[in-house]
Length: 466
Image 1 (cartoon, rainbow, N blue to C red):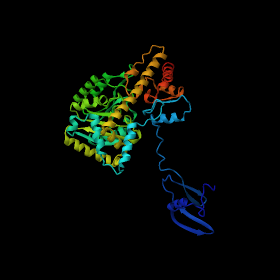
Image 2: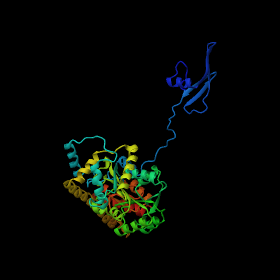
Image 3: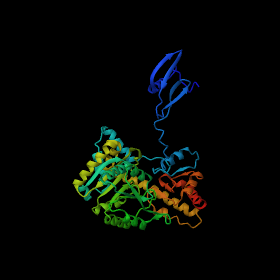
Image 4: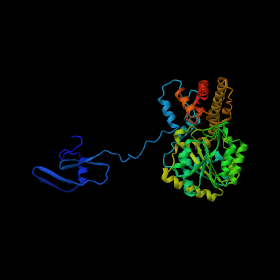
């Protein structure tokens, strides 16, 4: 009774406040009794009124204003790392998150990044706010890196470049531009695609649908399905394309297929929208990995390109990237850039400077730039070596005659193994190999020493789990 009823003499401040708020009429003393008239609130979930005899008391109930907010599901990619950390098995492998690791499976900071940071310390550069569009030196070199410094669109100043919060933030800024200035326009994304693409367009209230991309029968590209879906899309749709090293499949169109994709997009008056997260990191060549984007730009098409330096410079935590909009005229580029800045201002005001200066220093300095290309080639080469060793191990261990050569046809840090959800769960539950449930593995988290163990896990899961 003491816990549920309050006396006026011992009421807490919160309870007294409730009583005061709900008291209607007068308080009358008589015959040694305190008589009070309380008027119940019609509907207040924060007040619980209890009665005893002629005395009614209002008791404050600790109910959160956020009761209606449900628990969000764990992120399908970042949640893998959390589960990995909780596993104490010494054989465990984290092949979920796309972050480069050394042969010792340790995080790697590029030497060229350390040199660029030392330059920044020596110069004593300030930490004042950047302009809304970001660091001018960064914007210049990132557009030139993407398109080539001698590209016509660069020389004619037809590129609107705004520094973004890595690839995700750049995509989100572009999505806001689409929502505001192309109302009702649909974005077509590949099936499958990077898991965050759908979240970005959902939150920006941009409608999207999927085009066929992955063929599970061949563990390759469903090119005919892709072309058919692009042709069937409403004219003027935005077509989201992975510039290189498609995530999650690792399957890219051939140069000839890229030409046909560009043909259809031009015929349908679609707008290409590239996500370039792995330039230089996929093949080891900056120019080769940008060939798809440059092909579309050379045709005189207007297009959007989101860039990220998380992978190729290892700047995962610096959140450095850019959104580029290639326009048909210098005037259009100026207007687009002004509106991108207008959208960015209430989102995050202006971007961070540290990562931008690293990129500007590395790409803008011929010596550091050459060192960077060598380090990228080394990282890409290590992943290629692991990919080859995994294929060799699978071919040696699987006596069924299954052809695993599709692994060698893929590119970049990811590989689509062809495993279904149940088989992927077996990889984790039995073999302590942590990966996404769609069968994707990050080869960047694998080393040569673990390839045979991983091959054992894949063969077992593929053949023994339906």
